[in-house]
Length: 384
Ligand code: SF4
Image 1: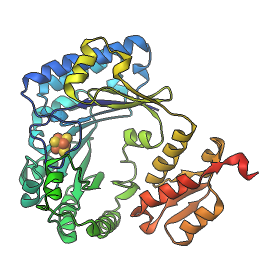
Image 2 (image 1 turned 45 degrees about the vertical axis):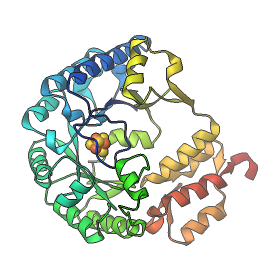
Image 3 (image 1 turned 180 degrees about the vertical axis):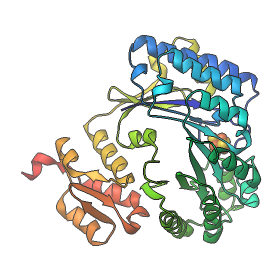
Image 4 (image 1 turned 135 degrees about the horizontal axis):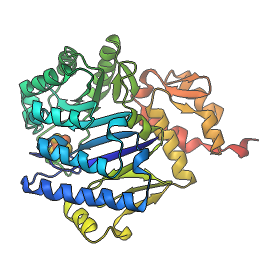
């Protein structure tokens, strides 16, 4: 399956914990960005005729795509349509919204462009926490956004929450999650805070002014999973939960190592066996586009045999469906039985047919298990 990702790098305000490719600039940049990303799309379409027509899932993320006015949203999707993306025949078309820019006009513009899934960054309903991490919206704004979105017939809605925030206890997180479940959502994602030393929050942590209690990660994660699963919203990836049929096809394609094109500053793509991305910062990306897309400005990582192995193990074990040992063998690798038996014996992994998948607290220790499985993989022929 072929996906397409568009990165809109703008945010009204940069959150204190943000380590994404996001900038806060005057709105005059938005028009310039649209011209640039349109050139990038047209350049690709000219060099690869017929490929845009094969796109099955579209994800417009950021940053905050919903900072764009309704007119600019129509223009962005109009450009996608004009290069051949079958906007009205996609299997899934997602756009990210932030609560403060989630209004009737923007949502209607997105719907007009074929968007059938909106992902909204709620993060928390706790005013103090929202302030503490530098979010620009209020708890009530998050509630209004969810209220608006979940009333729209045929629209699939995801809400993101964060946990393990400084000053957040397990009960506070579960309160947020319970409140979220008052809205009729088909999909929920929650992410443990990762403190990047280059962010404002990271600097506060380094100075000892803020503390993130790593010991709370596991109880919060377990509690969150239990609560969602008790409501019929099941984990299908380590941070993603859905009612049956509401899983994100676009994201599943990432984890299943399908191909996806990517446009915009720092957007990562995977096409023709190569992982690639354009310059991450806005100004060098603008230069990249304006100087005719010099290949030297792209970061290109061809996926060789060992990278392929790392990806298969790492990405498969993130998902409920797990790692297919048959697929692994077909790619020339196998995991020694004693490695799997150890994790299965401890209850951290389970076997299902030819698959092994995380189970129980294996999800909490995922990084350790992935590393162990990957490091112990051996060429299949070595065992014969
Ligand atoms: S809204 Fe998201 S992308 Fe924008 S600054 Fe906040 S965390 Fe970063």
